[in-house]
Length: 132
Image: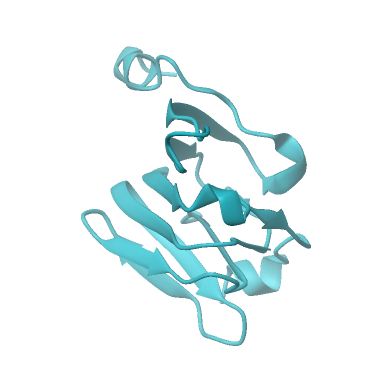
């Protein structure tokens, strides 16, 4: 890993491997508690990495900071979301997101109203789904 990348990923920890295909890292900024009903984290995806299908109890807002975000909602075509874009994923929408096969990706994930549940993990994204 290059020195610049190591510095950029300082403070990140491995994301839970059981919910990702490939390697992802997580840096939490805000943990939900009885006062702050929200979580905020940066998530780094190595090239080709994606999370499993999942839903949220309330909105999830993704801000793509670096790279190209692959994003798909169940029953919809794969979307390629460039850095600088924002996604507002509605409650209960089954979806997944990750990096392109050719490059890394980082997004900020904001989960609001965490008292309604943060995430329900589902099945793995197949290679066919990932490649659209």
